[in-house]
Image 1 (cartoon, rainbow, N blue to C red):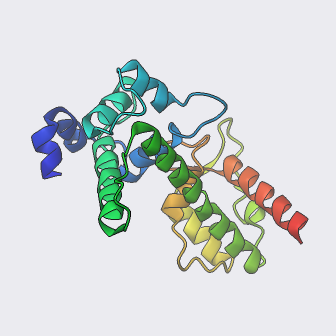
Image 2 (image 1 turned 30 degrees about the horizontal axis):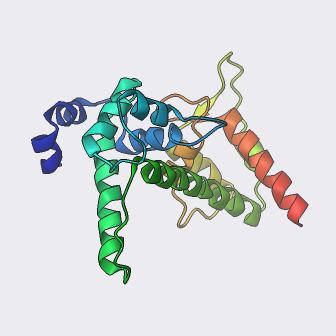
Length: 210
């Protein structure tokens, strides 16, 4: 944080003044826009438009600027890039190879994509716990609301509902599961419709394997 204040006062001020997005949500948004979906990602396009050659060495400030350019919170971008570079340095220090990793923007984007895929595993843990408890997640989270907008639950509300249904949530991070279920929900909420669709897809895959 101190390094961010010293090297990037604009983004440090934005970080300090942010009251609407949790740090976890901001990081997830960075992961989401770095995931390929049939072509160039939004983060990749923003880096290119900012003059970055994707085979150049990563600079944390340029990553933060690239996020700001596409109107997404940039306060976590500096930390993400710094953490990535720290990991690369740690790997280099422990490696017997004499060839240091270059830590290019392409490598950074690939690392974010892998992190995005790993985040999805929190959903598998959650859904697996529901199956183990014999609890139909779609049934126990069905809400009575008939409003035009999709019903939503907070992570705490989802925890209460699942625990009441006998689901063992030990070791399951519902906050990360909520982030993985990004579609259709407002800030800090889980869209029940999106949750049901993901659970049905998981059950379909599970039944196929059985």
